[in-house]
Image (cartoon, rainbow, N blue to C red; front, side, top):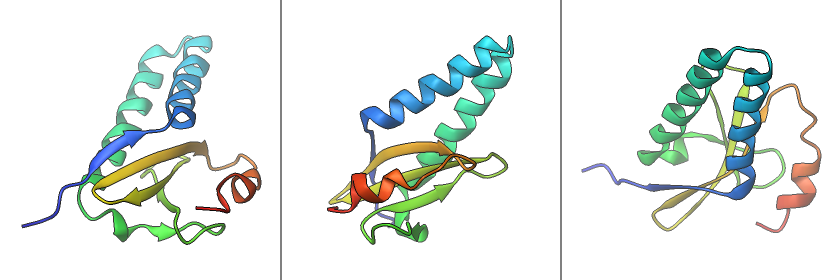
Length: 106
């Protein structure tokens, strides 16, 4: 039987989803924003099984990254016991250097 993990969103990840929705709302593209959020969440939900399939981030061996298929977003997460903690959701074009400092002690 495949082990099931719980998904928990950290505040930064929840804020990122809000920011994405807000951006598309400003562009009067509500449905586009809704679809993108749904696709991100669906991809993240796939981490309920085999989250270790994802590669380690380049700043911590305890932080993994999930590239969202067909979207330019990356979800960074950690795994503790039976829970996957979604820490950040970033557009791939954004500077991600600050993540090294923020998560170096994980």
